Amino acid sequence: MILSIAGKELRRLFTSPLAWVILAFLQLILAWIFLSRLQTFLDLQPQIAMMPAAPGFTEIVVAPIFGTATIVLLMVMPLLSMRLIAEERRNQTLPFLISAPVSVAQIVLGKFLGLFAFLCLAAGMLALMALSLYAGGKLDLGLLAGNLLGLLLLCGSFAAVGLYLSSLTAHPLVAGVGTFAVLLGLWLINIGTSDPDSILNLLSLIKHYDTFARGTLALSDLVYYLVLTAVFVLLSIRRLDADRLRS
Amino acid sequence: MLEASAPESGAVDTTVLARELSRSFAGHRAVRGIDLTLHRGEVLGLLGPNGAGKTTTMQMLTGNLAPTTGSVSICGVDLLERPTAAKARLGYLPEVPPLYKELTVEEYLRFAARLHRVPRTSLEQAVTIAKNRCGIDKVGGHLIGTLSKGYQQRVGIAQAIVHEPDVVILDEPTIGLDPNQVREIRGLIRELRDRHSVILSTHILPEVEAVCDRVEIMHLGAIVYSDTIEALRRFRGGHALRVGLKRVPSLEEITRLPGVASAETRDGFVRVLPEEGQDPCEALVRASVERGWGLHYLAPDAASLEDVFVQLTTAES
Image (cartoon, rainbow over the protein chains, first blue to last red):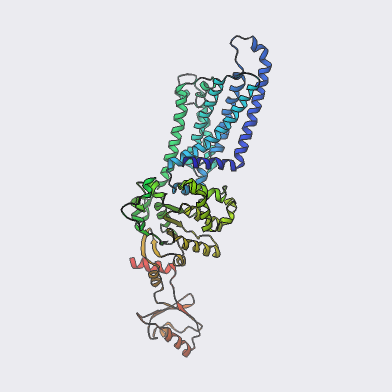
């Protein structure tokens, strides 16, 4: 059931030009960054070769494109997620799902997975771009895997936030703007803090990404993203369930 | 899902059983403790003016709205305790057909069938049958958004029957259609009776007479009348006559005719109520010829929905 709903959601994304435009846009920007980083690396290669414990190929080229991808995805996520539930409300198609023999949790999870599958596709294309470097040298696969995992976890929490905001309203645009505001807020929440132990650092979306970007894996960061995702998915389920009880 | 296939307490013939169903919205009681029973092979009409609580009732029967009090069971399965098992036996067409306009008819029906747990092996067959029954086999590859309203309504009905549910619930299925489409959809609903039990809501009295076996009339959230269609016909017809006269005499003169209890003028016609067990037709015709009233219309006066409500609600109070 969940997979049927996820499959439909994915198909729906691809029946509109939006998904294609976003994929193309993402690929274009990242390829641009990729090429410029590659140029930088080639320019710096003689100096790097002299340095002891020099930063590698992967660190100079691959990590920055994943870093850029996080920002671009932050910006496009509202466009992808805003229609998930808000549009069903607006078109009054929710009764179709609610009166089918599926639970609200299955509906919400299906929608989440549909969007997440799309994001995996985008991240996969990015990974392929990085892997193309194998043609000319050796990659630090651990670092690549860390970046990819971080990006996917980040995408999951973006998608969950977008899903929840989409469940609050019947206007996709309101959901989109709200999602962007919340994501940007969570992203920048620690901007004014100088104290590294501040609670705001704990909440910041991007702070937790840093460890993945360095190719390390910290349990606390992994848990942060999983909890954030789970909380917003659960909130969406609760919100949709509350529709039946509305007064 | 095994539990869904085992009907409980031998209630095979009763497909829908609602007891004491109530729903309040912010203090306003939209539905007030109604009881509904639907039997296999029956079309039940839920009739009422707009705002009577028909849609709210249907939303509660399909699990889209939790009742404030009361219970619903579908084929003996309690909707509130085991919602998925009960919903597997339901097909629902809401007032606004829930169509994904960017999918084709076939993609949409396939999705509907999968959601309703039609096994993969018989999926295509189920979709084909539903398309044939609803007369949309020719537009299977079209995007739903490009179809006319009549066809969209058919697609809406097709999604409600694609999984061969025991109960089909249709909320105002003919609203907004042209007369030809209305006739076709009514024909389709009559055919549904063979395999499903149907509840349909409407505010059009002739529609109920055309397709239903039984009627429940709702008014202000309560059921004010519940009987078979024949009984409704008798109730609504009474024995009143609608008489068209070119030169209308005084009403007293008509009332004095044998067998006439009372007479009143209404929108250019004279409405004549006969005395109990009397038929004043002949007397009326004879009097018209003899006295030169110019009779040009004489027919039983079927009450409009409005009249039925006036009668029902005044009888209640």
